[in-house]
Length: 107
Image 1 (cartoon, one colour):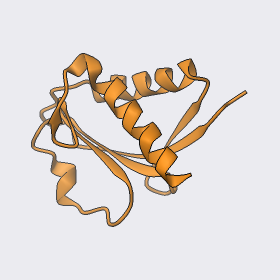
Image 2 (cartoon, one colour):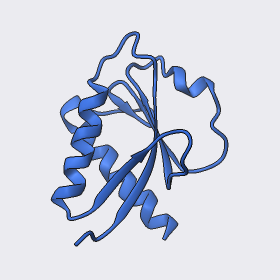
Image 3 (cartoon, rainbow, N blue to C red):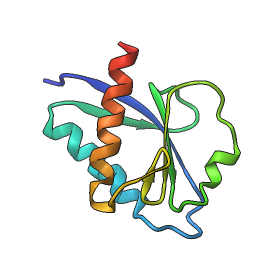
Image 4 (cartoon, rainbow, N blue to C red):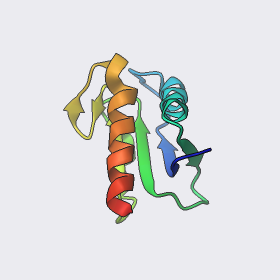
């Protein structure tokens, strides 16, 4: 039985200079949700999510150039989350905590 359902809209950068494995990050987020009995569903541009996850592979953060408008979002810029440096091995844990905090604020 799923405790909570998270719908997260994801945007990826073009991947021209990645410092992190962007696909692995998403897989790790899914694993965190299953460990806690939750479910995370990543949706594309056509669907509405509870929040927007911008996955920039490097600090250049090209996705920040296109303002996605109002709403809750988390921005990953290489080994940074919302401009705070995070060791790469901790990246998915930090992002997962932020997803849960935003979802709790929306409830």
